[in-house]
Image (cartoon, rainbow, N blue to C red):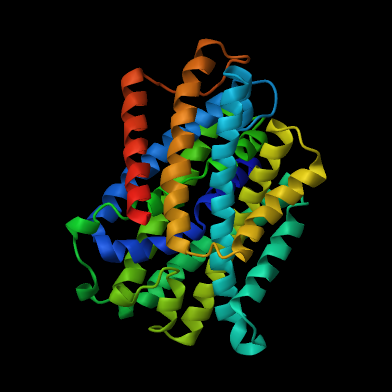
Length: 377
């Protein structure tokens, strides 16, 4: 196993194990654990397939482009503008979720000692990550290796120390009226497409390893998240909060809560960095903005949304996952027919894609975001 192969895996893992993880226990408490297993397995497999399609698209194209740039190159300007809007809203939604939860966790961790409101801690997190986005890929990937290793260790320790607090009465199999609630949050949680261009860059000289890196980087987090959700739900039950760890703090000892909050912050910071970088690259590569303006728009617009009161975590995550995630999936799937018909470069990754599969996934995504829109409004 080469260093870059390991970095590629943990970069994807660090992107996936983020804020979405902390919204899942709350909705699973309402839906039951059967939907958790169904949606986690099914949506992780779908996201893995979409990430492979994205990797194939990148490897089939000469210039550096994210999804809007690929659409503009292969489809046209109108498609590029629409896709840019979808991607920008989606990434902004992700970053906004990181600011919301990061502020809560940092306040829980440091507030007892330093005082102050959640807003101050959210602002501190925003300022820190905004500066980190100046770092290059190697520094980012190196940080991902350390932080993601700590995340995996943290999940294991939380599961081990929390086992004695678990009560079987806190689990229900399924609540049919709420059975679809986990769709949006889990779709959001298992998505890692923002990291795929970085994976392709890291493995530029080992392209034959990209597919397996994406597999490990997708399915290990899915297993870890399932374990984490079951442990948290078994501990907190009906007291589970939308951000998970505040509810956990009411049940478990201070040491475990402190460790959990540190774990949460690590998860948020690693994903926040990758998504901020992804947003910056969309503005630079696909929309042709200069570096400073791209950085400013990528970092400051989501913070502006937070300032004006967009702070309902469950709604932000559900709508971002189901609506913009679903639309991006549909766009990517149908783009691939164009790319496969006339690639600029022969890709080492060749995914099987048929029109029945494309229609099935498109219908699934459409139904998913229709449900989330009606459920949240």
